[in-house]
Amino acid sequence: MANIFQQGRKKGLDLRPGWRVVALFGCEIVVLRLEMRAELKSVPSEAGTTTIYVTHDQTEAMGLADRIAVLHAGRIQQIGAPAEVYAFPATTFVGGFVGSPPMNFLTLPVENGSVRLGALALKSPTGSEGQIVLGVRPEDLEPTVAAEDSQGT
Image 1: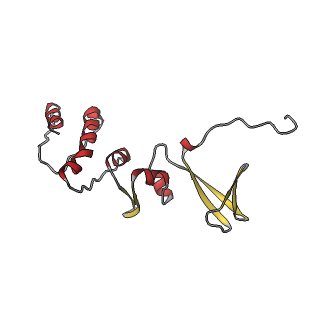
Image 2 (image 1 turned 120 degrees about the vertical axis):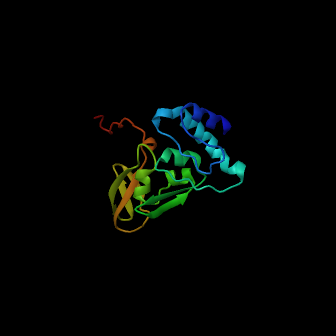
Image 3 (image 1 turned 30 degrees about the horizontal axis):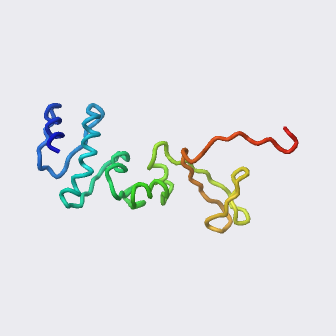
């Protein structure tokens, strides 16, 4: 990390070796910020310590952490590995907050234990009547051309 501290001093930043907390900087020093992220990820394991890192930047959280906790209104919404939280959000807040672009949500009726979205029919995870909220990430969708019906229209 000495190289990062030297670069920081060149940029007029007062970074001191041995600090336990290191602040990451804004857009004006993007390259330094990316280098610091890479080095910060290795510091806790090299030091043999557990580190709690607090950030509002989900890119930093997803890139630096082995496990993340997503808080909303002072309450923990979900704790898990970044990939797990991204793929299986526990709440609509987590699904909408983690990822860019955020998850899309569709409220769908449950009829006879199934949920229909166009021609797609899925068994309801709740198994009951009412409504469910289906979360879909944009990268999980693929555009297709509609097939012609049997009469060629």
